[in-house]
Amino acid sequence: MSTPARRRLMRDFKRLQEDPPTGVSGAPTDNNIMIWNAVIFGPHDTPFEDGTFKLTIEFTEEYPNKPPTVRFVSKVFHPNVYADGGICLDILQNRWSPTYDVSAILTSIQSLLSDPNPNSPANSTAAQLYKENRREYEKRVKACVEQSFID
Amino acid sequence: METFKANDANRDELIMQQQREIEKEISDSTPLVSDQLPLTCLKAEYNGDDIFTAKIQDLAKRYKYMRRTRPDGNCFFRAFAYSYLEYLTCNSHAYQEFLRLAEGSKDKLIELGFPSFTLEDFHETFMEVVKRVCPKSSAGASEIVQTELHKVFNEQGYSDYVVVYLRLITSGQLQEDANFYQNFIEGSFTIEEFRHQEVEPMYKESDHIHIIALCTALSAGVRVEYLDRGEGGSVKTHDFPEGTDPKVFLIYRPGHYDILYPI
Image 1 (tube, rainbow over the protein chains, first blue to last red):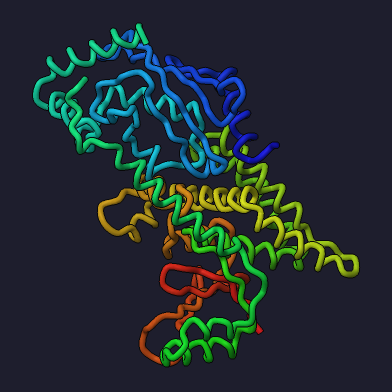
Image 2: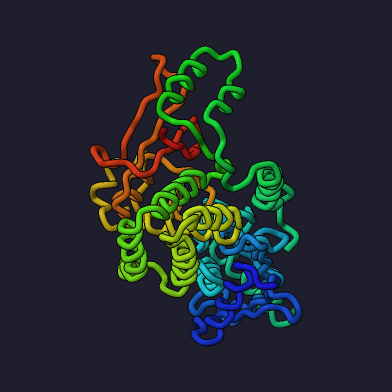
């Protein structure tokens, strides 16, 4: 059945294929357009470089009026990523705009990797190390980059 | 990665889950836009309250009917859209003018920097709704158009897309005339932050600034009747923008807008 959410997700997918942003990719799962798998490649010149981080995106029929639930499947050591992979990012919560599409969501998460916001931590250890011990922070991030090859 | 602390549980999702349950309760019990109800139905809500009862009596001298809208934070935009389109369905000239303005609004928003890909989706649906309620001159036709309007506004998909598009038009107007609107924003918000946090997201309630910006963008006048606990036995009336001939009539009770029908 075609609903506004499903119609819009088809458009999002088409756009992501025709005009893919650098360093991200995503597609609906085989039999359900409401659940997508995505990959974000760690941005260059950051400790996340070379990492391939997998995510799932779950939409409801209220998309695009409400944001989807986005979660890292790969382990990510980052001030704004929860232990369960959930992401603390304003545009996925109270600053969501229906004008964002999947492409915009993935590129925003990609920039979050480069520019963490240690003031609203989802992982307080990562936030603390990011502020106070950058070398240790980068070491921990690199460990999860290596883990991401195996996952 | 064993060092996540116990209090780092994903609170955002728990809060959102609870919010979804409350929203479901409201949506199961209230239509997006109700049938026409006699204004006197308000009295039952304020039984025994002298201030409100007196004010409702005052209001009943000028208005006979009302339509309730679902209290979901979108009530101003939904009430405005319904009421304005309803006015346009019986005013062919005004309808044609609005149609032209609505057609051109997409390019204007893209010029202002809105992402064209997603904007197109909302604009298409918005135009589809506008065209579905085109005034017809044949006998009995206005009733058919009215039924169509009511049907389309109670279909969540269409109804919400109309709200989104009006929010984007409002946001565009705030951006275009940012120097003016900046004066009305409380706290340390910039216009940019205000648009992204209080205007574009669905379910965010509207304030005067939203109303002024939307009315200005669409050249439409709105009269709001304020029913509250304030002094005096009569409701306060406010026209947006001041001095215009209002086509949309709304009643405001703290936190909520419904549609009014003048006698």
